[in-house]
Length: 151
Image 1: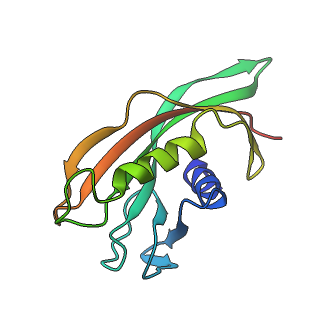
Image 2: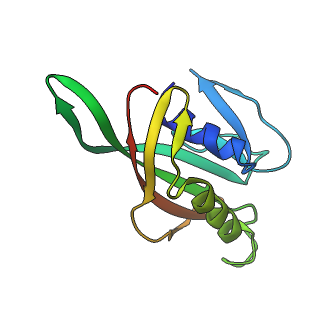
């Protein structure tokens, strides 16, 4: 599993939402209610307005000694899309969900899918980045993870 799936798994374990994975053009599962967590981009479903996307954004040089990588430093972004295009920016519940994501991830230390996470850190303030084509509010939160290859 890659970083997006590991982070999504942490969010699911903390009760933030349920997952939707894609294999090619097939997405599963899609639920009619609640927050949907996706890897790489928002799910194309019109059923779930409320979504959180986990997107890798690169990272920093790994720590290597004697030819062995001991610590990787990937960066990623969580995009949180609100449920209601007619709501005001702060009343749609999206800012509460941004806070939930921060609580679930910031300063996390533990194991996710065989990788030991020494730290996950917020790398700035959450930012409102606008509304999507359907006028749903979207917030961005950027992260740095420090993880080992094995537990």
